[in-house]
Amino acid sequence: MKPIQMVDTKNQYLKIKDAIQQGIQEVLESAAYINGPAVQRFTQSLNAYMGCKHTIPCANGTDALQIALMALGLQPGDEVITPSFTYIATTEVVALLRLKPVFVDVDPVTFCIDPSAIEKAITPKTKAIVPVHLYGQAANMEAIMAIANKHGVFVVEDNAQAIGCNYTFSNGTTVKTGTIGHIGCTSFYPSKNLGAYGDGGAIFTNDDALAEQLKMIANHGQKVRYYHDVVGCNSRLDAIQAAILDVKLKHLDAYISARNSAASFYHQAFANHPNITVPAVADYTNHVYHQYTLVLKNADRDALNTYLAEQKIPSMIYYPVPGHKQKMFSTFGLPEVNLPVTDWLTERVISLPMHTELDTEQLTYITSHVLNFLNK
Ligand SMILES: *Cc1c(COP(=O)(O)O)cnc(C)c1O
Image (cartoon, rainbow, N blue to C red; front, side):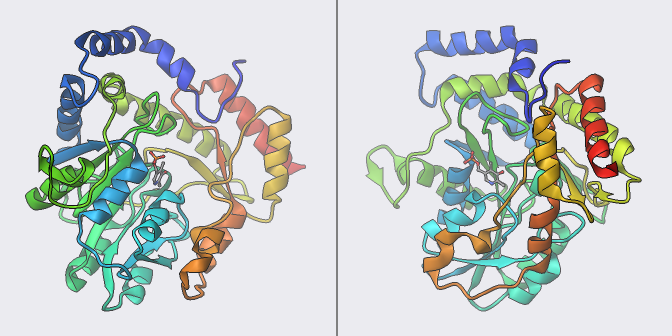
């Protein structure tokens, strides 16, 4: 059996090695290392794949979120509603910009931000909502957009874990997550579903004026070289990464199918087990399984984690400390919040290996050891 990894980027690479090496070689020989044709080509391919009006590449997913919030013209102290049950980047950028993160609870079934909790957290200072399409399925965007439109606030989607995911509105229209809110953000961190071989990110919008702001902010606040209209930053997608991503984008839908096959294998093994809740997929979305995350009932999650490690099966807790309990926010004078679903999930979730290269032998080994432990 091949060693089991949480994410197997190496074997995925070996299957597309020639195309990747050709892409890299072209960039090296073009000597266009910054914003050259490779970056332009990938940006166009991605824009077409997403079906949105504007795609702005940038250096990483955290920058994408930061630039998105910078483009909204918010004032220090303005409130941004976000889940606490997410990767730290989502809320870190809010604090970095001296905005106020307002942590709300998530839905216990989808693990994504709970629209009714958003509605309750709205105040006159609320300026934006940042839903996260956690683990690879969409948050309830129709409900979120309705709340945002009612209160005149912006929506910035954190689509770092869900690139390629579809969202279907009640009128039957289907679009890609990341293109529904005013701005969408994604990451090309190597372990993401569309992963580079280094850092990368992108920002999406259908709004021409926001697109102009986003481009300008990502490029030192300039439209015309050396004329700086606003305070920006330097956030570029590397040309070599763009060439790699352009090759990998062609495989993204096949990668999503492979992830779904692994998920069905897990699902069949675990769905009827009394101690396991398998991921449930809401009817408005599909799932691109960035993570395959179980919720354990009446079982020692941390002991399972240790037991699996002893069998050479990696497993991860995403995330061991939710945002509202992170020390970094303690100096922010945030009010105490009570997020029972977030706390409950934090103690019970465990993510199993999930990637495009898992074979039946590995999946059988993983599932039988999880079941062994739980049936002991
Ligand atoms: C990965 C990730 C990010 C940040 O992306 P980087 O490219 O690592 O900066 C932001 N939000 C979520 C939910 C993520 O999973």
